[in-house]
Amino acid sequence: MKNVKVGLLGLGNVGKGTYKILTQNSEKISVFSNSKIDIAKILVSDVNKKRDIDVPKDILTTDAYQIINDPQIDVIVELLGGIDTAYEYIKASLESGKHVVTANKAVIATHGMELMNIAKENRVLLLHEASVAGGIPIITAMMKPLCGNEFQEIIGIVNGTTNYILTQMSENNMEYEVALKQAQEKGFAEADPTSDVEGEDAAYKLTILMLIAFGVYVDPKIIPREGITKISKEDIEFASQFGYKLKLLAGAKNSSGRLKYYVYPTLVPDSHPLASVNNEFNALFIKGDAVGELMFYGKGAGSMPTGSAVVGDVVSVAKCIGTDLLDVTPSQPYPITEEELELTGESKSMYYINFLVGDEPGALGKVSTTFGNHGISIQSVMQRSRGLADVPVVYILHETKRYQLDDALAEITQNKYVKEITSILRVLS
Ligand SMILES: NC(=O)c1ccc[n+]([C@@H]2O[C@H](COP(=O)([O-])OP(=O)(O)OC[C@H]3O[C@@H](n4cnc5c(N)ncnc54)[C@H](OP(=O)(O)O)[C@@H]3O)[C@@H](O)[C@H]2O)c1
Image (tube, rainbow, N blue to C red; front, top):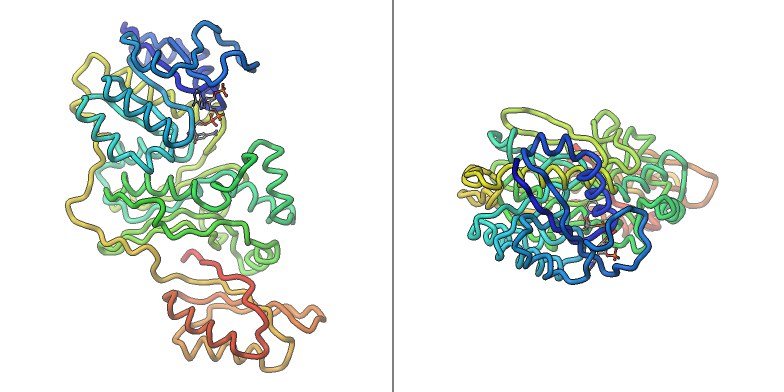
């Protein structure tokens, strides 16, 4: 049996989960990997910090290069977070001939292509299963058992924080701020939740998914995105009355060579499998030309679920060490497509529009007529009279192009009865 030495960079949430799994399940892991896997050193920022895990103090260090330059260490597991320092350490590790496993979506979405090429040049592996949807093994599934498919569409609920908030708003009638506070208290949201609630985290994950599924690199900064901070309880209630759940979706679709991609809060029909994905859970709905529709569901974050994905990668690396498996591993570099896909970002969509309209006879008819004049057809409309001068009127519109919608809305807002457009949301069709 081989001896495989691991250097862990980080002993936070995921670091602790990874450490626990590798030590508690070591017997099973050694059978599967045909290796004795030991954690030789761990990088932390403070060796004297009180930790709720029993780790020998003499393996902790604050000097990353004591680990990266250690000739005994075969695998570096980067679990620090952030971009610049993590990138520096991953690059240095690969260049020194070490395999790397990371859970860091920000680094992979930003520098993944370059790092994969460095890994290839140095004949080492760079694996990052935990970088998308934590415990759900979506990357391995797309790279290995599903690799014979042409992927047509991926739609994911890939951020547990926002899914938890939207679920609480829907099921327990909470306002956004209250649901966010509860998510923070339960450890599902960070003290600074900006990256999650503004959709940046989901965009990083979508970049990685598109790289693997479609063989194209789309910079996360150019992915059209909206977060959930403007979502109101009222919109969630209306959505529910129309037969939809509101979810933050990260989606990409290949329509005859045109790749459409987005991160948007979206109304998902109750009949769609993604509608029943609640709280901190994640899910990925995939269409492949051979396999058809698939749905992956599970915990997208957390110490042990994310550690589970990290350990899976460590075992894959251990299996390769000392063999020629590196020649056949499909994980590097990404299969960049020969045929250029046209990256279109946003295209046609169904829309949900919530207006505040004066409660006057004929107001609804005028709005509906304007949509018709712009070639936009209406699927449903709901007006809620509440005894006030202004009432919400909500439309679900059939598929239309965004510029067509904007033209219609510009005309509608000239109407003296229309006080405000309260919200515009996409509807999954
Ligand atoms: N948390 C999740 O559920 C989850 C899920 C999927 C992916 N991820 C990804 O996993 C990675 C780690 O996340 P996490 O939640 O485990 O983070 P975390 O709890 O903040 O832990 C970070 C760890 O790295 C150490 N560290 C950070 N910067 C350092 C530096 N410059 N030098 C030395 N040590 C440093 C910290 O040391 P101290 O302990 O001394 O402070 C800590 O042990 C991130 O890339 C994250 O995006 C996390």
